[in-house]
Amino acid sequence: MSTNAEFFERSCRVIPGGVNSSIRAFKAVGGTPYIVERAEGPYVWDVEGRRYIDLVQSYGAIILGHAHPAITAAVTAAAANGTSYGAPTPGEMLLAEAMTERVDSCDMVRLMNSGTEATSTAVRLARGYTGRDLLVIFHGNFHGATDALLAAGGSGVATLGLPGTAGVPASAVADTMVVPYNAVPRLDEQVAAVIVEPVAANMGVVAPAPGFLQGLRYECDRVGALLVFDEVITGFRLGSGGAQAMYGVSPDLTTFGKVIGGGLPIGSVGGRREIMETLSPLGPVFHAGTLAGNPLATAAGRAALGELNDDVYVELSARAGRLSALLGDACAAAGIAAHFPVVGTLVGMYFGNGAAPTNFVEAKTTDERVYRTFFHAMLSEGVALAPGAYEALFVGLAHTDDVLDAIGEAAGRAAAATAAQLG
Image (tube, rainbow, N blue to C red; front, side):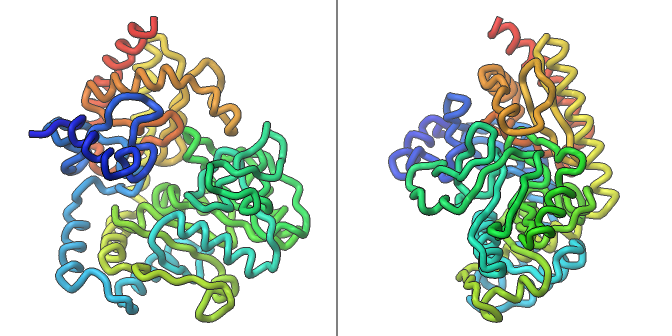
């Protein structure tokens, strides 16, 4: 039997960094990543046969639990009929209908392959529809690996973006303005779109301040810009209508991913009919994709949505609250200053003496050394958190009371070990 270390070393020979998504390499927490061989319910097993309670859940794509019977049956049936056609299918129409029935702001949706493709398409569509170039994004929000959205912010003051990664030319972000989260910017008629995570789930889970989303809606209306909600994480995670239904603010465009694929690769842009009809083949804004509307992904997505109703979301919210309380109690008992903020079904993490953060500058004050130590202590206890201090924790239907109890017990031991190690 090969070990995690042996598999990882072998992967590093043929895959840059040994991973196909950077965070998986454990650079932020140190050590060697566990290599997952299989999963079921709330658990994943590594190649050494060790079982972990999984709070990563494919970064939110899994909500029913791993290998849920409804998902596996839907994918198996779809695969028996072929895996890709390059032609329209009933399945993509049915998923689009299911989405538009649940999200009031979406008259139409266009399916694609990833959240990144969804946000890049939303940018192109907003610019094409308005005839403007300038984008406004928020410091600490993450919208995938799209050049125009990979802009680094300044010191908390509105600033024209600078490239946030090597390989992105300055010209790609020259029309991107980065502003602080939870502060409504003053817009002008050059702005094509304001793009925002309505709940910031990439900096430890930060809720929108009262009036923030409503203020963005007002400012966009005032200058004729489009308001784009990135609900790749929150869409069908916080509820059937997503964050926009929770907060009562209707965007012009919404990007989706994660849950709508039932764990398979997918993305989508939805919005008002007159905007969506600007997409090709009806309008001048081009979009195409060989695997867009893939029959396996759409089958899995329909199966996932079919299992989710209001009662399920109430239960998931209760479980998120309980997880937060268990982790908070464990850290408090060990004398570790920490917050585990809850927004609906999402749980965040912040380690430090300050209040729970409201923007990225505050979120960056989390004590990453404490998180690294706690992360590995939890992993030793058989609980897998995300290998980075700014991610969300995801609970799903498979995280029963017994599983949550086990997490709480593990957290108590892990917090005590963390406190002892850090002195």
